[in-house]
Image 1 (cartoon, rainbow over the protein chains, first blue to last red):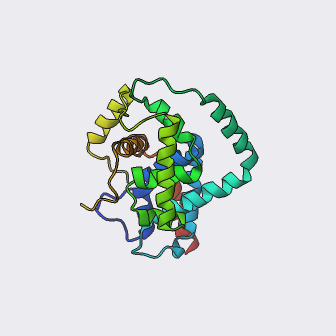
Image 2 (tube, each protein chain N blue to C red):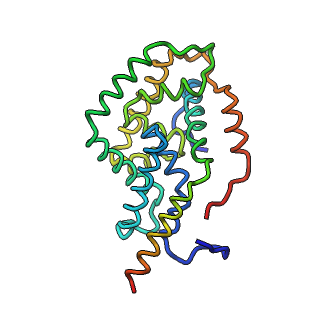
Length: 194
Length: 50
């Protein structure tokens, strides 16, 4: 793909590239495993490509891609249901201790707590809380009512606060050096991908 | 700006953390394998249409 001459050759599928970083982040939040996330993105790319005639041009490509991604995730998850249940059980056991924190939260603790949410809660929270989807877009992506998205988000937030034993008056911030790196990285100009 | 709903401090901070976790992946370079895959799909189509 070596085009240095502005907008692509008129193939709308080329726009998929722009959403790859967001797709990876969404896949990562669903699978919480980078190898699985990359497999998921790969399957999504192939499906999106082969079914692109079903995408209505001018509508929301990001929501469409995210929808394929989550459908792919859930159908492979259904296949691996038993395994997953065991993993979740084991994980819940190791996480029953209250994370050590002094009113602050290490990113690792937050991620552990996040991992304990249900898939539906995690996905709603990521879509609206992190990737900037409106409630309506998130509802469209997940094929549920807007009210369902709202209540999943509310329950997810409560659950997170509960798991981490946080209260309204406690500060919750990431102070890891990793966070500083993340924050400073986001200040840099975006690299173009193509 | 239209607020979705007034957010409590806790909600705001949860979202802030979420964004950081999410951003970390978004900021990573996209692995070449995905770009290669797209190119492959494209070449395949070009081939089939001939």
